[in-house]
Image (cartoon, rainbow, N blue to C red; front, side, top):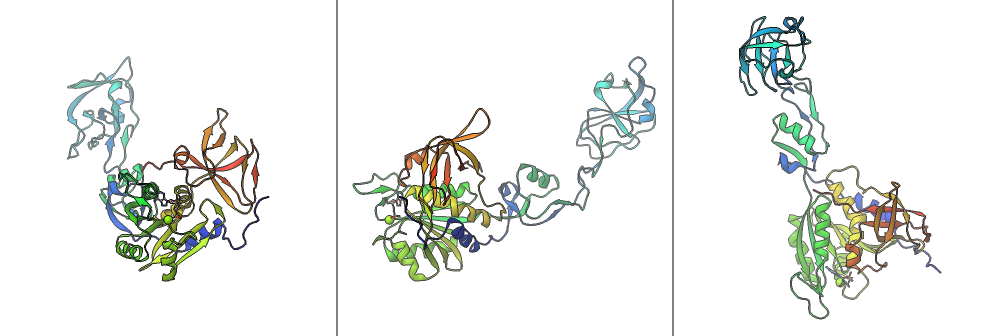
Length: 415
Ligand code: AMP
Ligand code: MG
């Protein structure tokens, strides 16, 4: 029989709501344009210039007056004297009289006296005189000043996400620095007296510190500037000293380990005494013990369980949305897909279970998912072969093979 839900447990949704309530946004800072990639604009940008900045040619051709080409045809071209060349980068406007033509390059300013451009391919490409083989319409091949964006118009609103297109626009209107919501600075600390630095050969009973790498990588992927502090032993005052020392450089602190019921679970013991960090049991598997609160001047801290799978699932469920909120994003959650389970999945009642899975795209267009590894939260290798989390809701105790379930693809954000 399945265990009945423990009434003292907080649901995943309740804990997430509580956590997000305790997260603000980081104050805006000015950044060089390329460093603003992937961030949200924290100012409204008005264009100081029109785009395009001046009437210019959209083709290589000849600037003419449309009326002078009215009777041109392939059989009976109109021939006009070419009185000059205008290259892109020409800094004066140039001008020409009626009945004349000027050779013009793409992007070059339209000379006064001309009202259209005949493309090169509709001419004989002449140098001293040009034969024009069709009539050109007034304004043909002219890109008008301000037709894309008028001077004084809003270019981008506050909150706009800055991708390549938006960065191009800012560059085009002459902005090389912008005010943005910065990447939150996240400090990651692993706790556990059994831990050794990666690269040091673990002795018997010792374990390489995978979590500070795991969580720092996940935090970077979520958009943070992550920094690995490394390892702190299971020692009350050592932990408090390290946390104290990291406060000034962090917008968010994350510890792993030491939050269970064990005699050496110092994170829980030491921070409970401070009174500003709450330790809770959440109705989820893995990731039941969770700590969240604030230290110092209100720096949020997550205390995640130490098993690597528990740490990753906890990160995905609670910390990633918090980092996105710090970044100022409105959509905090990863998107999910529905997939057909390729095997039967059991799950305890009253608990939201997160299993590691491999998501497949079917030839028919839908998705299917298979599990990798068991429910054990120490299984790092099977976690590494997964590409998604399979979510079994609280009220579901069994997913039969072929039934649909919710899957969170763990796509890299490719920052
Ligand atoms: P804890 O939450 O401290 O009770 O740790 C639970 C399990 O996770 C233990 O088997 C730990 O050895 C393991 N563990 C804790 N921290 C890490 C870490 N940083 N890297 C790898 N395994 C860890
Ligand atoms: Mg521990």
